[in-house]
Image (cartoon, rainbow, N blue to C red; front, top):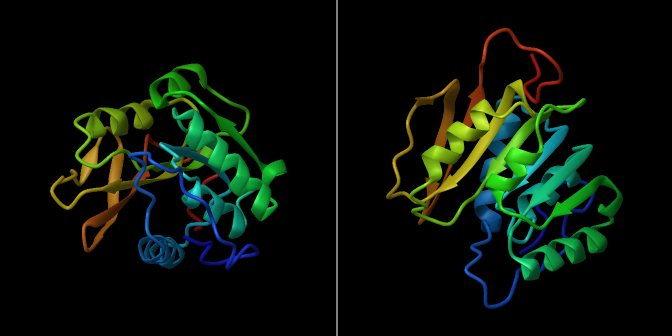
Amino acid sequence: MRVIGGTARGHRLKAPRGMRTRPMADKIREALFSMLDSLGVRPRRVADLYAGSGAIGIEALSRGAEWVDFVERSPAACAVIRENLEHTGFRDRAAVHCTTVTSFLARRGAVDVPYDFIIMDPPYADPQILTMMAAVARWPAASDGAVLVVGHSPRVALPETLDGLERLRDRCHGDSCVAIYRLQRGAASGASAMET
């Protein structure tokens, strides 16, 4: 596993050992960021939920994101994310929160600089995936116009719209799928990852 593009391109990343973490493969991340680029999405402030190895958030940092909050409940995985940040030189542009996504969303309410890019790559076939997507859509820390990326199994059909989320793209590669949504609560406000 490695960083695909940007300033840290080619840097190898570690994955947690013996964990049920399923890092998004290089090919899938490359396809994801290609789709984001075609949509004009330029992440600035990022929340990487279910971060695992931190590969997606680190890819965003490598491609110019200003800040990433990594959220991962496994202490072993949190340690790996910190190692990967150190190795890629992004330690000063990120924070690792070793807690559950539910706790992080509850604790992180309205913020001065809202997240314009949110990553959700939960365990495959997670029965709570739609509940968590709805929670992100209602999250005060997410800006209007924020982009939500959801990793999912091809056996899990995600809706076209959900609580203000509108699906822009949904692509599958082998046994991995990624859906891209935009949050539209009303008139856009604050920084948005979608450049117009």
